[in-house]
Image 1 (cartoon, one colour):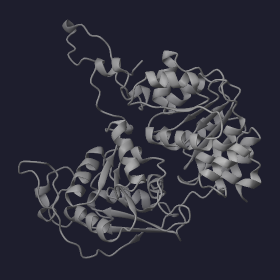
Image 2 (spheres, one colour):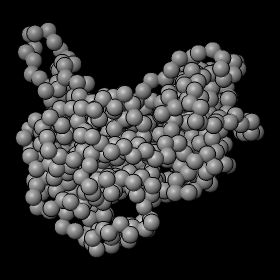
Image 3 (tube, rainbow, N blue to C red):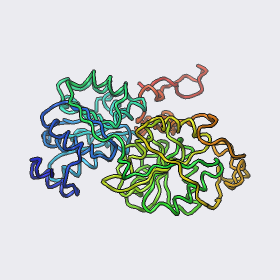
Length: 465
């Protein structure tokens, strides 16, 4: 089937062709007719399978420009919200349609102005709730609600925020939920808010014929040297390197640059401008490597990614599947490489427990030992071959430990739910540019304290109201 066979209007079809699409993907072919019929839909498919077009195209057919916000699309991260907005705009380029993205980390007033004109709003839950609370978002005309990457949204703690947003929407609406996995939280929400939904399930694992999945088992103090070797000698295209924490993303990015690798970082602690710059740089191939946390890279759609490197093991098979779903797209070949050391063993066991995954152990190649600086300045850094000169935040050094399946060395930290830690008290609040891409219950509340009260912290840890 081709898009011409799906009876889209002339302007929409022209935009689809201009965007380079000729044939619908399986998830699009199955979902679009159901959405056109007005059914609630639950669609399960891998990242990169064309889910955005699957809901955007039929929505654009139904929305009437100039009659207020009629569609609300919720996404877990700023990057994904921005990406969805850009896709919707590209599909509506020959239509008089206004689409805006609403997320934290940027000023409120431009969003307030855009919301007055918008027909479609793409938002992160936290910032959407802020607009609802301030009365700057009129949702009375909402006919369509889309929850994209729902499993990640709930994993990040947004479930109550999503429920709160839904409570402000008209009950008569069409609800569409797209997710790579159907977790218990997703299942409960479907049962509560969707009416007799049609279920569409497409491929949920990457085609093993197109994706080579391997792991290396190596001493911690040799880990970075192997990564550099693989990036320089075994990576013909673009690559994403996944780390478990923001700190590790920054350290690995800095050290890759010292080794002449064109790399940039993406994580929730960076400003939105820096995050966008890094993603755009990889898309434009101004850099070769993006170093990222899971949260920040969620849902990114970037062409020509040949390799995914798990510098820190993901904590579950679901997380692993989301990571590797960024390569081997559109029929192209890709590789997913996990670099294991002792501290990764427990997490990797969770990944390997999924019988649908086929990850083969690879023999270690010969590679040059390179310098790795955990700290900048002083005597706290060192060479990776020096083992314990690298400091004590992960690269532990010392002798060779037991191989995979051996001693449990603990599980690395999460990305702190993807929110920025750069609050600066009431000034940030007054500037309206603070980060609200976090679950409401986990945000600081900015309040005024009397100095004699004994509270010198400037704000409480209660949920932002």
